[in-house]
Length: 288
Image (cartoon, rainbow, N blue to C red; front, side, top):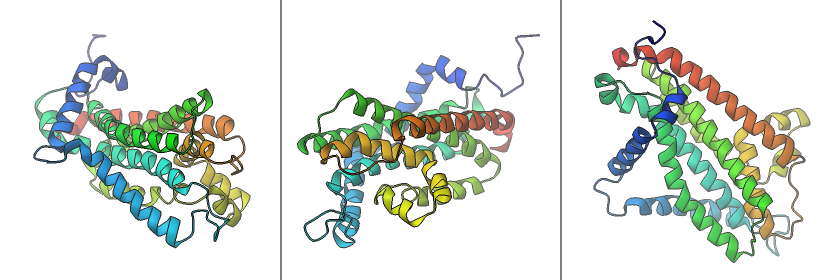
């Protein structure tokens, strides 16, 4: 009797680790479906963020004065690197969470016909987004190198930590909203609202000092505790700050306390998402 389990229930994310071959198949399937009939294919991974970057740079950097210049000495130095290093990370999160939250509903035909670890679908969505993130990261690295960036162990480890924070956060929220979305389609609208504000809720297009100057210490602490805020600031510390003269300040204890808080928060969200997913997955086939 010890080998029996409730129908539709598995071992959670441990099954994903044990079914890595199935995960790779799902990732390949999703990539093929997404670019089926597309002329540019994976080149869209460059085109979309490129157009987004140009729009933000012209509107904010040039028109609204975020970029430092002789006429605007109070702006951010090397604003193009600052902006793009935040945009690529937020794009990864928005794509990963948006697709993961819909992954169970979109794969209803597989779920109703056969049993396989259902966590594979949200995790595969995050993995596909990581595939799209890679070419954007390469463009960022090339731009940084041309701007005088010379990577050191601290910068590389910090960038990896920021990516892990965002990947865990997207996976945890994807499991949470992906399972709720099976029962209540309102979850999709909640995710859409969340993704609508995430770019502005982190210092992607503006300096964190602008927030600290406007908010009191208590409200700013809530803002700073956002894992996306922490990850974006770490990306700035890893890619943007070394291309400047180093005089631009960073939040205190960014690579110690705040980095640790971001990792812990994202891990907690993964556990909450996994618990919710396992609690609801028993009736996925019936509800779909």
